[in-house]
Length: 315
Image (tube, rainbow, N blue to C red; front, side, top):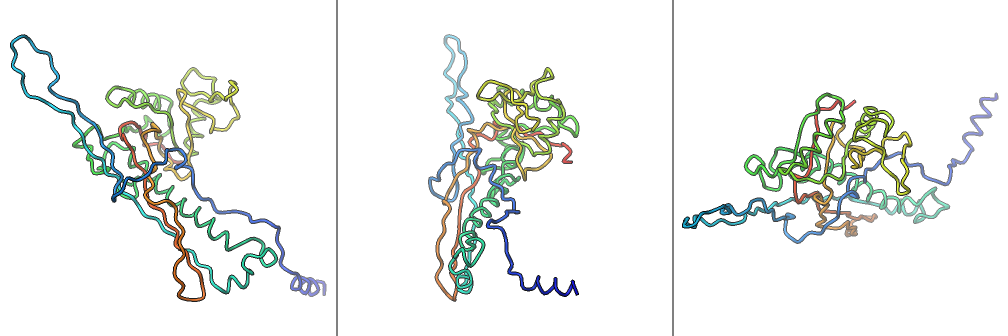
């Protein structure tokens, strides 16, 4: 009898929920804010003029020597491709009626408005994860830029060796401080002349790096907790406050979980060919549709000013 009464009451209850929306979907927007946004000059590619060679006629000479052959500076154009992204949004007339155009008395949240705000986040998520990838053609990814091989922006590093990042496998499957120190030392060599100011990795690798040296600041090595603006040591026990040689180590979600990337931030740019655009489409039925688009891509003005450490254990 009790069960019957309970079932009847349950059936009569109006479905209720707290006046909020709980978000259970992660969308990545961690990479693009790290680098400078730049515009597009026109055309299908974002172009950079690269000066890679000096005048070969520079030499010493003795009195009476012939002039020899004149030389000139050497230039090449890097052509970075763009990628177009789209998202189609639709709201039917029945939805408008049932939601009373987003009235708070008809729904727990404005579902129509959320379709737009969340679709923007969905689009940015795909753009971001593509930019974290290994792409050498559209969409170009950060791991494709920071690599010792592969034709990028129309330039082949096997022919033009100056168009290659410093890449090395770690000494073991677990990152060692000496791996990062060696990478920094090599890219600061005149051959690369890189001024690394940011190191990127996954959250697991950042945690493993933290475990290599224990509590930050206790070992005589280059890994330390960063100094806060107030001048004191930040030692929260988290791995997001660590740095190597004064360079911050930033963990990124969705980044390949077996690498470390060292970058000179001035050399990486987010080029926008088309800003985020939302346009209504013509009606063909009892619904409204909008097309959301963005176009652009990740670029670099100097691929050589970076390093990649590979061969680490992902787990």
